[in-house]
Image 1: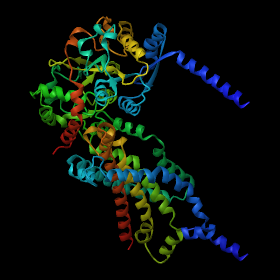
Image 2 (image 1 turned 180 degrees about the horizontal axis):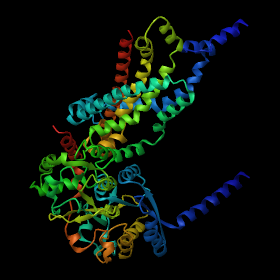
Image 3 (image 1 turned 90 degrees about the vertical axis):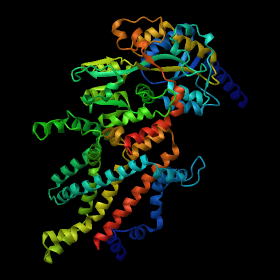
Image 4 (image 1 turned 180 degrees about the vertical axis):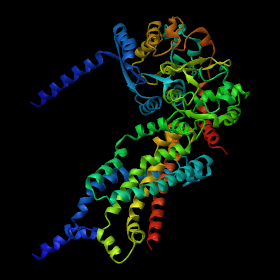
Length: 345
Length: 295
């Protein structure tokens, strides 16, 4: 009797096993936004064409990085989506493996800046967003044209800037350092910190989330602020008379990247997934639903969609990219200096 | 029969000793659930945090983190600001709450009293995040308060009230005042009415009765209320984060930055322990003042 139960158990186990491994899978770690659209644009067609099921693990950048670190010796995840800063951090911690780009058919169609943003082919940019200036056309008399306009007297008390702890904060400071004449190799950013100290009392508050900034615009507290393009649609929805400016010094570009986890168990599927993600088909569908701006150069978008995304020749040409690896090296030191600047000596 | 009588007398329990006499030593068992819970979920973690903060993970020697905490201009400023705002909130709420509590405690109409008590507790039942966001609508440049001042012609231009220490202070005051009112009210209600009648019959005026009988007996309520309000104020995160923003760095917002952004756990635990020690110190200070005041 005992033996019979044992055999029965083994049969059941085997059956479950073959069922479980019968379907090919890829485990993807990503953000928990727009899940229904991701299903429609990516999961469903991917399953239909390649027979691979996408299993997603969700969370913000830092939680998912921590999880990846904990699973280092036996990773569950195959592919991970990160903001470029976190991708550089994951690379530094040795959690990723280089991508063999020759396996990707769509690699040659993407912008050059998206091809190897964190170095060593540890990540590929699959979407881009710009960081420009937005202002109230009814309140600001003289149009905004430059990043230096934040130092204008008539805007004092009506501006907001990103906090250093935001994704955009460090790159914003690097750009300010460059604009105000700091040396490109001087990573102390002393010039930027000194300039920012001059106007810190003119800043209503240094925002920490794009939703906070949208609220500040809505309440009428803020007339001018640097804004990430992904928040532009929601800002327009407030119905306020707002304008997006490409400053003459250029806009900052940020990438979201996709990487393969070191020791990934479904390596082939991971390559198929990344290639599919970069394909014109997916990039177009995601853009049309305003989920992500395309980095595949073949994607053509209608005007009404394009104006809400990071898209268009001039828009893309104005982008300045800062090396996320440099930000990883210096961020803690900059946060310290930032606190000192805010508190004042 | 005699024993029964004695038991009856003992129903008015006033100290642990009497609890012990009534229930025998078994009363210790009554504490067990709370002791186990607090031991596992509070005392042990607290000890771990304290130990971690004392010995530095980078091997710089014991108490290094505390030296670093006080040496750093930023954390020192945030600490002093938190204490300053905490003391203001505690003091102001005591001044505003005492008359309110006195009025509530002396109401003889039961229904009216219940209505007022409910009104006092009501803010505690709304979500603190929602309440804090409501302040944005009140304190904003086009908010309620500015509009009022503008239409009364007291000011000509809207004032920037948000993202200042003042905004944090007002937010915290509204958040924690109910605790002060509740503690004082319950202390006042515990004063036996006989005492007041005795004082009056011995010729004390209303004012004398208040100064020499009512107030000294209600000091305990002020101490408990003060500790609750102060502890709440210096540990609150949402209010300083939303109403103070990144420009008004306080201990709790600095703690968040160290723990969640910079991942400097050494400093984060040190700040947490400093918060804890400060509330203990303030509690002891309030008790001391209470004792001196009663003499």
